[in-house]
Length: 79
Image (tube, rainbow, N blue to C red; front, top):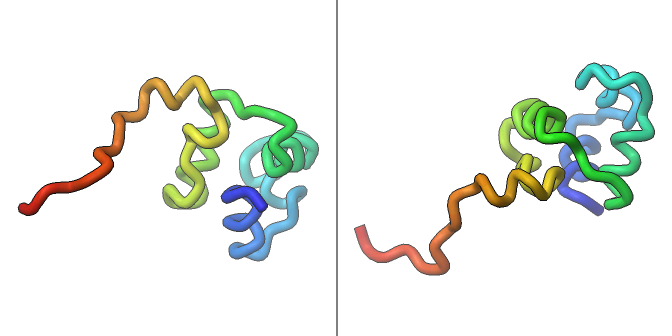
């Protein structure tokens, strides 16, 4: 299961209801994102990230955004 599918189900939303909430015309885009067969535009990926309060990172849906995400250090030092 993708993070999008997990977050959607946790909110009790069908693919169709989520698509409508995001302003999409059909659930097919949601289905494709959840199964990894599709990629979101940067705009849609950011809308999804905001809708789920950051639980679904935009960069996970739109690879082009990965270059814009600051790297996470492997270890955080004290302080």
